[in-house]
Length: 260
Image (cartoon, rainbow, N blue to C red; front, side, top):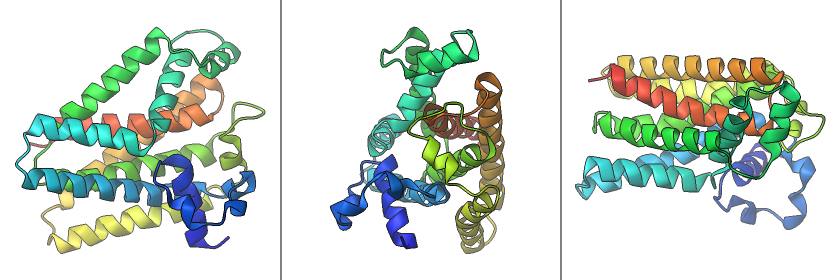
């Protein structure tokens, strides 16, 4: 498969964007998931572009900050089909059960929603809305552009750097077919290149906030992945989603606390 085809497959798998319609039905199979992890930051950029464009549209309509932040957060969740949010909630049920690693993994596979899943899910949703409300309106579209991209760069690292915790699972093929660390470096090219381009076009005025955001996102993403690995002895498809949600939510919250 060429680069564009792989990008389309990656987008179709982790979002509800119907790009798979551009490909013949016969090409959509388990083998089509091989080596797609490196394209996740590009998918994040696509999501971020939609969020940023929506934010600019709502700002043009003079939408109140809280309503704008809520609509953006709902759109964000909708674009991913709740895939990563579901992973965060499942992971919360397992991690906070304080059982053995084996039992945690069993709990995460349970389709029922537990108390910890609800608490963590509500907290993440509320924090994301609060952070978007608190961030400066002029810079918000840019932060929205980069947030999904940075989070999926952290996910790419988690996929390659840590073992898969189960013998089988939907996320295992992502891990097994990734070349680590080469593809992490390749995946970094797009966000860093775009980041540098925006800084140049802004004549350096956005250097500090964007560099700060990238550093925060990387720190949160790598810490989240390492913590989940230490608790479970590896990663799963659920923890990949949790890394994305934690990176987006916590990094935006910290950024809102630091930027006035």
